[in-house]
Length: 489
Ligand SMILES: *[C@@H]1O[C@H](CO)[C@@H](O)[C@H](O)[C@H]1NC(C)=O
Ligand SMILES: *[C@@H]1O[C@H](CO)[C@@H](O)[C@H](O)[C@H]1NC(C)=O
Ligand SMILES: *[C@@H]1O[C@H](CO)[C@@H](O)[C@H](O)[C@H]1NC(C)=O
Image (cartoon, rainbow, N blue to C red; front, side, top):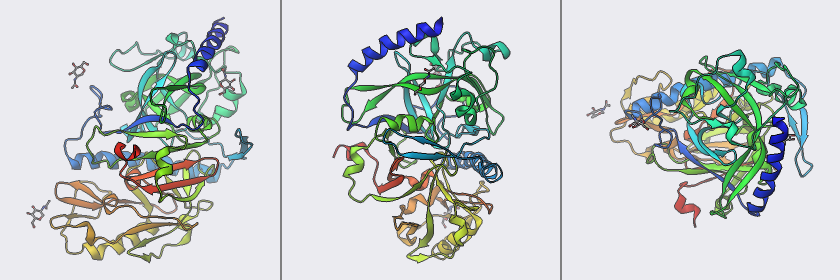
């Protein structure tokens, strides 16, 4: 009964919305994006909030990186032991995609309060607003949600509505349509996203349960919903995306409780990023402001070809490797040079088909190198920093720190990531010699065990524009100050 009602109101609604939405073929969808220390993200009574000092800030970042690295290495172990058959899907242009399903618990940037960049998100009809963690390591987008009658709440006692949190009220949105648990979508496609077997009646909603590394859980149901996005060119208009798969999370326990939810930017068959990108040329991009810039500074996560990207004349492109370590984005690094000299790093460190490989991740802050790459990088930078007094700071993972009195960036040679196809990523010095405390700088790399994946973290990605082309399988990048001013040029 209620499904029929939903469908009816949906059709009424969608015809109304279709007439209201702009012709957006050449446009890009924009989500406002903030760093976790921005006031838009702080919430009452949670562990989030402005760190008391720079040291505290860096500690938080390193702490959350640890949780994430464990998750990524977990995925890798699984990948090598349980390689399932890849399945394929096609986009609107008849391009085939190879997708490796994943079958391990998803742990997102929400682990231990680890979100780094947040986006504002409008979902439902009329739209309800949330601030979600932007996570290239998750494929599902979910938020706190209230839905009755719910099978989840029959088996476990759902908490009463907590008025201090933002909660999506499913009953107030006629476009909310649960995914039936008997559907193939639930039984097969979403099994990699932790859908549950529980299916008392054919129309019962498809349930999920995510377990996080710190023991937190999110339980809920999958649904299709309408997502409202702002546009880059038609700023006064909004576009409605219908039938976007979301998670309605009814029970959140542990640290995930502190967040509205997660926006999944990872890559997989039904991932949010692929779904939204589909409407905008299979492309998304972001420009990460310096995490030390004024904290109320916002940026955009965009789906579609951002006009800003096409105005950057010095874009370089490298191959984007999709579907090998879902839902992560991998790149083919061939080596690292410092001051123009290639470092001696065994090539297996970069081999994604073997035991290594490099992923580019929005949810990890520091750049993590397997020890086979970490040691040569530190050894090559050390002679230039010899004259500074080494310091032990209270962060175990950062083991090269020094008294920065008299430090100038010009003392440090340029570090470059060389991609196999010739592109070179040359980050600014401040992205790898980072401020750790008053008058203290550290080399911003952490060492991880070999074998393992290296991770280009978000501090390294700062002050660059990044464009993920999911059809062309290209990653474009160019230096940028990431300020609004520049996007209006
Ligand atoms: C928490 O929220 C309440 C009401 O919104 C407000 O009055 C109070 O000042 C807030 N507390 C903090 C520490 O931000
Ligand atoms: C959900 O949306 C997808 C398309 O995005 C569609 O194929 C599917 O039938 C929808 N399911 C429901 C229950 O609305
Ligand atoms: C760094 O060195 C200067 C002068 O040598 C000293 O005054 C300062 O306290 C030192 N800072 C730290 C954090 O050790």
